[in-house]
Length: 69
Image (tube, rainbow, N blue to C red):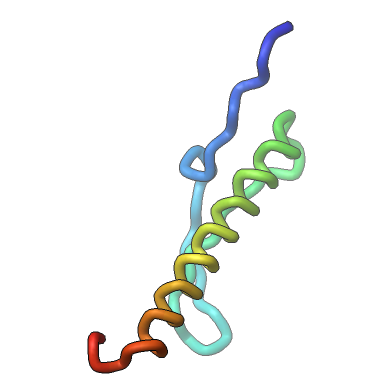
């Protein structure tokens, strides 16, 4: 049995767009006609979760001890 190639979030192309509040945000680009669509979506999802969790940890650290910031 051969194992499918693992798609990483860094393998996906990114584009920079401007959010509604004016900040620049990077977005992962997933091609809908890609033969590895499921793996691409999973990689993008994992990347988003990793970024959100890191932001939450940073915010918790800053709010727990504002004198250390």
